[in-house]
Image (tube, rainbow, N blue to C red; front, side):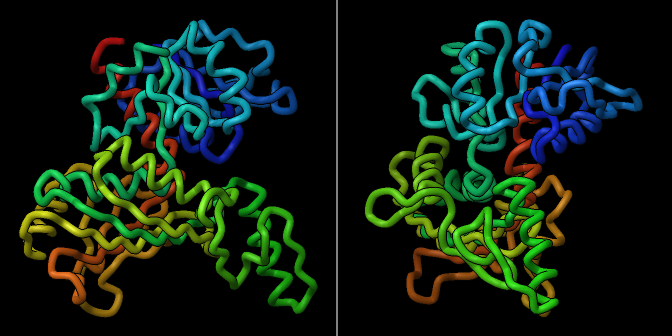
Length: 333
C-alpha cells in the first residue's frame, strides 16, 4: 500500500507520520509532500530518510490513499484534482459539510464510510467535535441525547506552530516584564483566556462554534440541540471540554460510567478526590479520549455534567485520519 501526506512538515503532518510508524498498515512507500520551501528536505520514516516533494510537481497517482494536512486553502485548490487519482482523507474544514462527502469519526459513524465513493473524498471532523462525539455516541445509543451545552478550552496547537511559539515568547516576555505583542491572537494569550476562535458569524457565534454545532449534527444526530462556546487557553497541546448533556431516557451515574468504560476510544478517570481527573497535560500523546467529573446536573434531573479531554493533534486530527485509512484498507480499497 502506497500512502502520501500533503503538508508533511506541519504539526498534523508530522503527527501523521508518527502514527503511521506505529500503525499496522503495511506501507510500501510513503510519499511526503509540502510546499516548494520544504522540497528536498528529508524526514525519517521507519529508519529511512524520505525526501519531501514539491506539491506543485507531485503526481497524485503515486498513492492509493492521500492524507491532506495542509489547511483549507490548499484543500480547496488541490483536493478536487487529487481525488481523481487517489482516495483523499482531508483534515481541513473545507469539505466537512458537503453532502456528498462523509464526515467520519470511526468510533461513531463508520457506517457512512462507503459514501466516500461519490467524490473519492473523506472529511476529518474538527478537533473539538471529534473528542466530544467519541464520548457522546455511546451515551446517545443508550439514553438518547436531547440537548448538549458545551464550553471548550482549546490549546494553542489547534491554531498551528506559530501560535505555539507565540505562547512561549509571550510567557517569557510577561515573566521578564517586557512589552507583549500579539500576532496570531486577537489578545494576549499568555496567562490569559480568549473567548474567540475563528471568525464571528451570525448572532454573535464564531465559526468554531458553528463547526461544533453542525458537524455534531451531521456525525451524531441532526435532531440534537446544541449550544457551544469556544475558548482559546494558554495550553500547548490537548483540548478540554465542559459538557452538559440532557437525555430523554432515564439513567444513573453508574450506568453512564459503565457504558463509557466499555466504549472504544474512551477512558473514564473519575475519582472524586484531589487529582482524580485528567488534565490536558496528562492527555498529551495518548490515543484516548478521557472523561472525568461525571455527575448529575443538580438543576436538571435529566442531565449530567462531564469533563472531556483529548490530544487535539492525535485523536483530534492525525490519529483519526489514520484510523479512517485503516478501515478503508480493511475494506480492501
